[in-house]
Length: 330
Image (cartoon, rainbow, N blue to C red; front, side, top):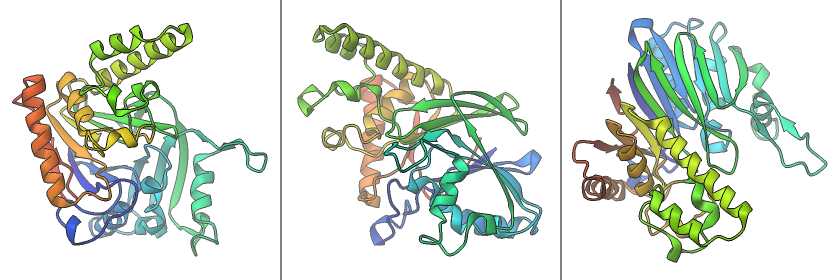
């Protein structure tokens, strides 16, 4: 199994001289399973445009069929689909999977929007010159929830993440091996219990921190909510446990996070904590902030490696930053 990063940036594309090395396209990853000639895609950010161009050179028109798994439907994870050339080729087919979502019911919208509704919406005439149903390839949309799935010989496990809209993490297994975990746009569940930087611990997954928080609460409902948050963080660690490769949201530095609480993203520290606690082989820092330059990303790598060694005593974990165009074999 080989996976390739086609988009590694978060929030908005960030092209320019300072992002040449790591790339400016938003989230998109291709997984290629060689013995099956099978393509799997995670997210359809702007990186899927270049992926589509690559696939056009590797497959004859009308012969491509693959599954696309979306973490969620924020623009930086779907906005590349209208520029995905293979979707305009008759005979090609795509199965798009993603979480169930809903709208804020203000009386003017349907309380529920299907996955297909959202793709239709972003390609409305007012936004884009081509409608979804004018794409000649066959595209099917299927909504999934947290659970276990077997799809075209793949074992897929999904995990709900902490983000302002319903967001899914994915664990992919082929023939029972080669576990690849993809968790982006996720924030530790403790965010609801912190209001300022003075309450911010170095490790948001440390059980001792939760005990300290719990001792400050007197409201039984608040204590129950904290217990649920603790359990969800533990569930996330277990979801990632033993993965050969973990691609994890690392958008913020520690000093940036206090002003970004509830935005649905993690610190570098959180990615390292989960990776070390889950004993993964390789951690890929992902969803780089649009303001982050190549040199700043390299500083993040050095910081993450030092953190793994000094805080967790882990000198064997491999930590790299996701880089557009780079491929890895499992």
